[in-house]
Amino acid sequence: MGTTGCWFVTALPDDSVQMFRQHFTDDQDPDTAEMQWWRGSGGEFPVAEPLGHWMVNSAEAERFSDLVMCDCGVELWEVLQDLPSIPAEHRFVVSASKSEPTAALCYGLGPKATDLLPGRFGDFLLTAQEVDAVLPNVEQALAITGPRRQSVVDRIEAWSAQMVDGGSFCTPELLLDSPLQLFRLAKQERLGLTAFSVSF
Image 1 (cartoon, helix red, strand yellow):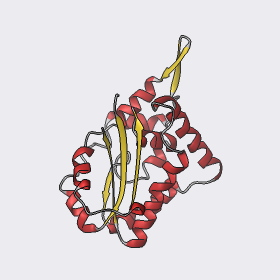
Image 2 (image 1 turned 120 degrees about the horizontal axis):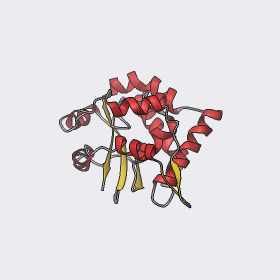
Image 3 (image 1 turned 180 degrees about the vertical axis):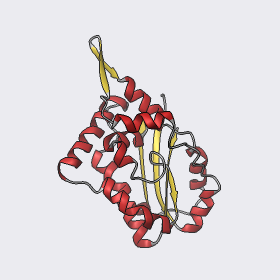
Image 4 (image 1 turned 45 degrees about the vertical axis):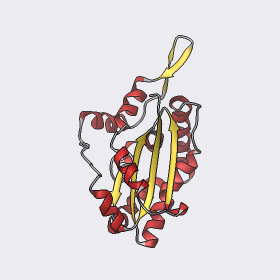
């Protein structure tokens, strides 16, 4: 992949959410064979495997990367550019060279925790009421501490080191904490929330 994958997470008023709704398509079947493979794997596969004297991307990591990739974000990104200026505290943007930031996050979390998040691999569109409804699951997935948090951080770092050009793109802590902070802010300010990935 010779591109840069970007993940946009943005808190918006409900009228803007409705504007996005016209362009947002959630046509990914959650029960495809590939999704069943991901869930059945438990995420317990290596990111790298030996090939002669080199370490290369494992077949499972490539398969998961292909599963996460989505081309649905370009139109949403264009809609986002047409909105009035969005306060910095209402948005989180992260990019990764030749990879998808959400692949690192979801590999780090594993299938069970990923399934607690709304939408599909970090793509979702929620009204303020829907944010309230899903927040307990989001807290369960992302508000983690102790050994569990360290395990997720280690897995995000392992994914980034092998799959991201340059070996990293942001700290695992930022990737975990920033979306959670936006969910909490959206609830507090009665805002909706959208997130989508796009490759440039």
